[in-house]
Length: 348
Ligand SMILES: C[S@@+](CC[C@H](N)C(=O)[O-])C[C@H]1O[C@@H](n2cnc3c(N)ncnc32)[C@H](O)[C@@H]1O
Image (cartoon, rainbow, N blue to C red):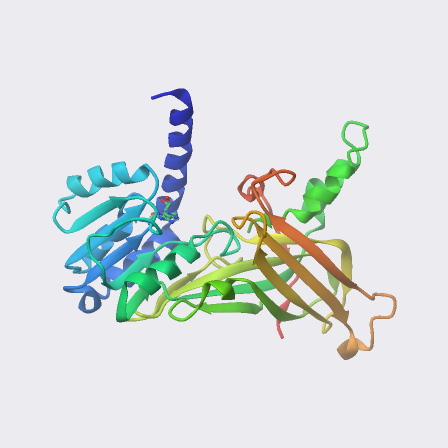
């Protein structure tokens, strides 16, 4: 194997290893499927983005009559060996290619399974592809696994990490690197800190709904400073025997999606009972639709606490989730060793 191809392969293997080892993710899919044999028995299943074939094999274990798994990456060559090694050659058919362009051996499926979620739910996610699969291949009344996704927001106190990550650029071995601060600040960090901001029902959501503007309202539960907003998502399978799901939130067991941190330009001084009201907007970047443009507008409302009295705070901040210059750092690289102290912002 040429060294470039080997390097790509090592990266891919690492990604699939991380996903498979994410027990919260993989076991929730397993439980949703294997514990619903009466829903899968005798059914045809499409596995969109089958990777190593794990969900296809769960579907057969759950009783599916036939599963078609499709993936556009070379991982599917390994998936073919895996399904053969596990005795699923006759019940799982794998197709190599992009779902949008491929010819599938079955034209209508009873169930679609897919693990399509990205950071901040939608970053580099393949939800568009799943919606296309739904509209083209799902039989009337067919089921989606999973079928609900919800984005939540909170606010956090995070002075220590902000110092380390942002203010570091003020003085780098005695040199002024502060021009980098602007870039670092606008790159959302993905990591491990309530408020429901957006809910997607996969049975009905349309591609255009994935660009959204959602209001949020956070009630402060202790006197402190807010340094960042934090977002995460929950995933639910309500089409199975007993609804199951998982959360990627700070209160839940760690997942490889972690949480996404959006630093504010200035700390917000808050007292218990204040409200932080705002709007979260998200849309694919016009030039590169794999990138996400995210805007957070917020205003401190101190009505319930006797006014803000010099603590006025209001801003509109644009963030970009991107792997392209000038935002070259992939969020994944930021995603280690962050200890966050929850400011205890409650749902209002
Ligand atoms: C998050 S991984 C999930 C892999 C596997 N289902 C699992 O749960 O371990 C998503 C997979 O979808 C594939 N993929 C992404 N977009 C696709 C598309 N448009 N058509 C086919 N496969 C796609 C990727 O190559 C990747 O292997």
